Length: 305
Image (cartoon, rainbow, N blue to C red; front, side):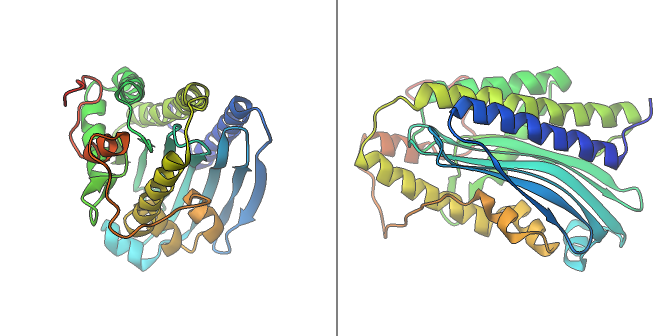
């Protein structure tokens, strides 16, 4: 069986956006996504869907894009590519909940192809709790491992380590959250392998609403007060720092003259910064702060870790 064309992959990812939007809107139960369709002058376009002021979600962005055209020189140099036109398509998601007890979540699945035949898949999914709860972390990572193991027994360990390294705020010396998986430049070595990687990305897409609706339902009923809201906004500030300073997707979008509003949909509606903020010893905030580090085995995590 021949591998799918870039146009077919774009159509599949477009349908994945529909599926995820429907599932997340149903889980929130209040309001709908508003769509902003856009065109890119150099070629292609996309659909950015934003959900705001729901029962559980404060802001959710689920974007689809399929863009093409001459590859900017900056991208060619950064990725070590020969000059040729590019095509890129994918789905990108960031959700900011109202409650600080519900985590922030991000997912991205994408496909990149050049006119000269160079191609690869990339993506990942990671969780950024305002408060780290070991049981939640275990649930999240086990779900990811189950999907990874179905396609390749080496995927989870490799992609989890990649996520730990990628979602790291270097200037803060801390991870953005509890990680997840991240992968990039996965090339199909054969048509069968190509299709397997595509199916892996789609399995992650289907997993997304299943996992996040669990946290929406379970965590949104937990009580919180002003202290927790203040901490949430500080953690959101760190999220902004990562996305603006270190995130490769943000840089790629801006470097390829992407649509700024869609690129920055990942920003939370409110975020705070406090000079030299210190957490109280033995507090939930302290537990979270001390566990924002690489290399934690969340599936087998012990409370005394």
